[in-house]
Length: 441
Ligand code: 5AD
Ligand code: SF4
Image (tube, rainbow, N blue to C red; front, side, top):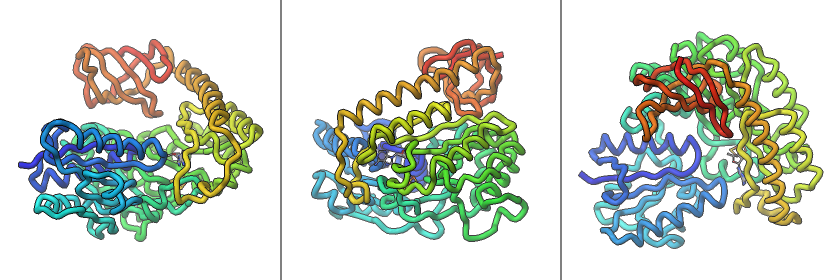
């Protein structure tokens, strides 16, 4: 039986794609191995959102190609494969096949062709109509937490972003398919599902199937209610697009305890001028109205975001507006990125007057300010008792476990019994810079 090693770069969508690729290959009689050295075929599922992620592929292919052992076949999947296509064969010698973001369902066929001796195999085609979104228990990143794509692609074309080019247009998975999967995952012991997509709240399925009995102001808030009604213990969802974030999502969170109290709402910048140049489709005023609604919700909702520092020609004044916004929103956590030029995007055409040194300084300043918010948010949990899904046992001791709260804080805790897969009450005794620490009650 041929052995396959899979390595994933990038977002949750890529993790989820890898899980389905592994599921498919396992059912096609390949063995999925965690050991790269013993693999006959090495697959890289790639990310192109920033330059650094793309470079990782070049480094890793080089390492595999130059290692002393018998050479495996190498396949490149995902965003870099979709964007570069067959040019990758010239750019990175040693690659045997490329498979685009929507072609992952045909991975078995591509590998068979490579094993038959075909050179430079590529498939950049669209997803098949009857694509199977399910994953098998053994190939999920966790036995207790599952990622479930509800919408793929992106129609927003923010000027800095490559995703609409690598992942194509938005396409929603029918609600009845999603609900059926959640019920199946629940039967298999999954306690928490993450409904994922580049913009989950732009969810717009072609049919009503699965939504008929659920009301709501948008198809997404109806989907949230439909999934909540399955009774699965926890439902998280990300990423939300600010323009399409309807307050009915907050109403749904307040109605259903199993809809988790966490919203990830990327703002990207605190300056209206930069938001316009980014073509984000929201202003600071419209964003803050949504933030205020989230903050005034009956249930306390944790709030996280993404920010890009150093967009072309971002002035000191623009940056200070971002600082002001971050101080106002007091995000529980934020992913802060330095702008990375992506060839082919409109922003890459702008001639940029701001030095890299200045961008780095701004990045560091913002990180320090946000760190302060994060520490304050984590400290507010000390002495409280929180529900934690025990996801992992520590490698160093069978008494140390880790998991997440409903509001997505990482909690490490001590327990004298095996609690894996259970939602347990943990008394928080200490807050660290990125996580909480406590003792099971
Ligand atoms: N440069 C830096 N960060 C980017 N992101 C997307 N494109 C770029 C880019 N060109 C960030 C955004 C997005 C997150 C997933 O990645 O903040 O929300
Ligand atoms: Fe990229 Fe904007 Fe789409 Fe997010 S919404 S994936 S940032 S284009």
